[in-house]
Image 1: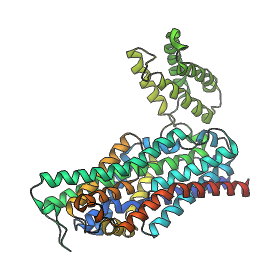
Image 2: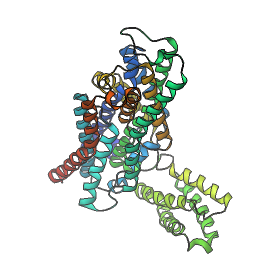
Image 3: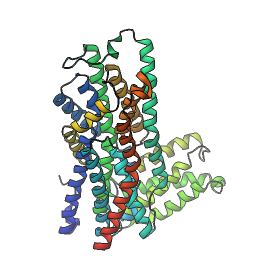
Image 4: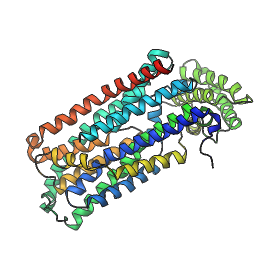
Length: 459
């Protein structure tokens, strides 16, 4: 089975596509070994699992997390860029955008990993996407950066570490009050495995962090992969392969009838007027002999956006029609918010393999350099439980978060619960905070600068 049709590209375009796919997989591979420590540090430093077993175990569950995580977060990444405009651009400029994003993201991830600084791959990718989006808007106009989506993602990235820190602090305080067996609050003895019940808790929380890391972070790689495919092969990937123009046309006719049936209220609802306008634009596109799939995608996105608004807080439809319209929005959205299974599988493999390599530098920071005392069993389990819960909730709400910052802040919270802020290593926290502050501006500047340079040279 052909996963994509290279005959649609020139020989140079086909080579570029393959190189960019390799680069996307490389980014996800780096993401794997950069973020592995978040899951395995606690089980390694509490002697619950040997390092080799821990990273392989984590890699397997990262893989499973990507496979089962859906595409909600991935589509959030796609929406950061004006992909609809980019699909109609000359290939060299599209390639410049992708190259700038990948080079900036890999450069920053590798640099912080080499220095042993826990840094967010999420921040890195999002900053790189924003950088090229800003320069694209500056040079071309058009849609530019989706600032609404960028704000949503920014808030999720900002508040998730704060939540992780204070939730871990509170949970440690509660556990200290209710657990009578104080063995779980002791530091591990060197080379000695913990009691079975404590070990089971730690391995379970490690598994959960690994799985939810895959379901959230892995989707970012899926989103980046889909951007590459849509830019290079828009006729093949702008819409799902199951797209049926006749079926969509029938659906739109039904929607049009429902909207017009409430004619008296159309003038009071701007969204309804926009829906009717989009339907009028889509009809000739859907009956054309040669479907312009990128244009259909753009207008279908617009139509579903406004159709969804008509079912909002002040419903435009009656109750039964409202539920039917919601189902219609969902079915139409599936045509342009998707990722082929082979894409998800490739990202799963890259993340899983990356998880098994290069973990030691960040593990040392997480396990030894955040707090002044050795990680106890309770601290390890608490940090990972809070981390897994935060990432899981973020995935449900399609919000990308930083596993690195959620877990490192949760560990800091558990250290503070024991002896207050004086139990934290100031130098490490300054390094982590510095990386957290610098990641977005640096990646925005690097990716935007590279994109501008590439277009100046090759344009």
